[in-house]
Length: 446
Image (tube, rainbow, N blue to C red):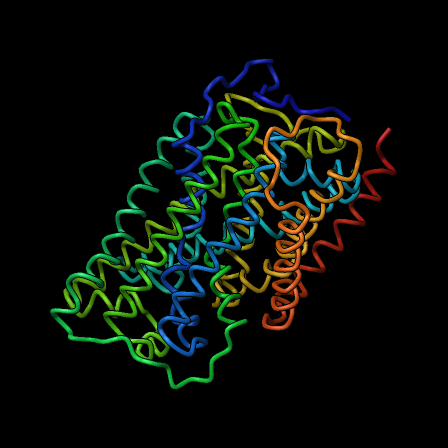
């Protein structure tokens, strides 16, 4: 087994990719990953499980707070162990190579590839509303987006980071525009007032949907080895990103509440389109469809970049998967290729079920929260061991802060098993298959 160089990437010919990510690049990636399609779908579900408008806004504020707690834990891990493998590296140090392998296997076959397929389907669904391509329109758009963005990443960090900056900028402007129109224009147009939902509230379930919308900030761990001044910029990028995301989420939910009222929010099937339709009519609905497609595309682009990094670490630590660890032409070509092939296969699965988005949610959720919980526990375990690395940033309030984070992850793991369908069992089964793959690899490895 071999270690990946901590602060730079080296391809098979010994050429280094000297293009590093700056603070604004990291913020663009994190914001681009988090602000995806969720904020245009989950607010209706949160509203349906809130007893009042204030309770609903409180849930979104608490979601930002819980995400901040998790980010502080990740900031300590990422600054102490800046590594391209991110969670893979933390789990390896805390629980050993076998657990790290299972995580990387899960990320390659379930977590990242499932998220890629999910985001691609969101992009395809909304592009199909604008320019339909026939019965398989969503799957065609989804597959095309995965292929095109993967090709951009093969050009190295330079093209990747510039593309991400523009996609994230478009997403942030779009979300802010919807929020401003809802809060400043709609009161004079619709005369709507916030109302109290008649539905039976379930605040815990509301928080599940809120935290799903905040998910993705942990992907910052996978760029720590390619970040300029990682011990400083990692903390700053996480704090700035989550702060910006929280403000935008509060703004757009205030717009939904003010423009539609809580009851109409809870009953809406296309909440953002309903909001914009009050001002612009059908043109507003098309504008929102384009906005959601851009948001999904930005998240998809960032998720493709970070997903390949774990595959690199896996290939460099396990000789029988060595091809995954090779960098060529300033990019992990094989890692991107394997990731893209699995994601395209999942797009095919989603097309067969004719319910791609929901299928991918079921497929990924329990596995995601299980390994998220283990990542929080790894901080506690590594702190308890004799230090073999500097800790330039230490999470405030230790050990209470990471324990709170672990409890939140445990609750969401339970909820994801209770509220998801059969796809969850498929995802868990694929992770179990990884154990058999590991045993086979150990038997053939010299």
